[in-house]
Image (cartoon, rainbow, N blue to C red; front, side, top):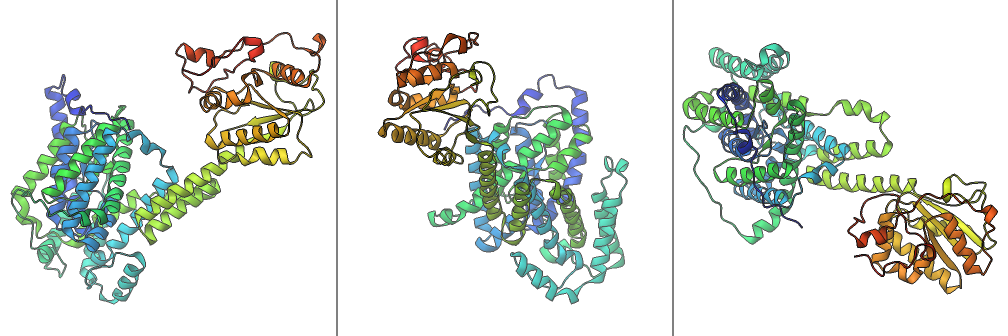
Length: 603
């Protein structure tokens, strides 16, 4: 594993030539996003099973670190809805101290991922998997808010979906109508608030202020932050280091990996969205390291897991942000609010915060994909629905694991279906130029097979199946490999088995026009030496000539030959002089009889 020890936050580059106008734009954006983040931070914390101040601390500490150390210009970090279900489950099962340890472990994993340059690997997670668990999380957020949205009188809500819905249904008769009215009113304000006003006065803030005022003025029997949590401390967070033990770490490794993976996916998706909005390009590995540092430090100060938030980042860009300074100002704005206005927060109704979260869930769910499933390939639709269903019914870890495995299996199946191995003669020939059989004499006892596509473990059995259809082995078998762009160890093993079987029966194998990657793989494995380098030919004319030589037949008449041939490159010879073997080109190795002795080994 190659480590990238370079640590260069994007802030360092953006501060070069940073001017007064840039600061004013960042100041406006940062203050606006800070105000927007306030209700979200408290709502995410409460839904995650911790006190509301944990959300604000997360937005302050993680928001500052992600902006100051990250690999993007405008991303805003803090608590997000994607973590709600995971954190609530971990806290319920293992306790809050272990939730803290789990988050720190996730931060360490993220730093290691960044150092190992795994930032670009996130893009290999299939779209149906990402959208499936995102939609599943949205459903779980909505169900987690039913209690506060309807004001149900019940104790802690179960974590598991079926048990949760059963418990909610059993307490449906305990609806607090004033709480439902406040929640519905707040949600309507957030949804229908004019978009042209959002930049100056966000709808969530209006709902928060108006909803709180209504509950206070009308003295409505609605549960508030103060009645449940006793308010928010008006102090700076204190450092708290939990007690560690190997037994604890061993059990927390899997949930920590889930947090790290989700943080990586969410942050890099956010970075891609931000790049599209400001025409920029982020540093994925630096972003992962910043996310890791934030998730190591934040829990020690009383916060929860954090990542970059797409909605707050989009707000930041729309408000004119130009650099990470806006994200830093957003964090400082929240800190000032916490220190100056914390006593007022105890009056905020939980029904209003539940409306804020329901709106978040409605926006984050990829609902349009359900209407597109009929037009998707069945395999992709199956992956999406499986990931979605497992996220809702079981948990995110199982959903991602099964979704990735299912996507990989279906991908292998699709690729293997494109691989073909068929017999070819003049009537079935499709090639042109020097690779064609048209106009050539194929000696009796010689059979030509065409291989097409990737020759790997998902398609290796096709070679054996194709040959079994013949009643007997030919005296000379020519495999035309010019359309095989890649081969793995299983494909190589299939070729070796074929050669051994033919050799044992006194038959011969010739490879025609192998591509660069398969050619170098066979050479490195020593297969070319066992096969005989004279039996690896550049084109069909040379392969047939070699077959006639093996059979002791005279050369093909000159009238039947194609005199004009394309110049052939010699990758094995080129590799001696520094050519790269990995590139997928049409370079092939000429017959040793025509091109001279091949090198003993690729260097």
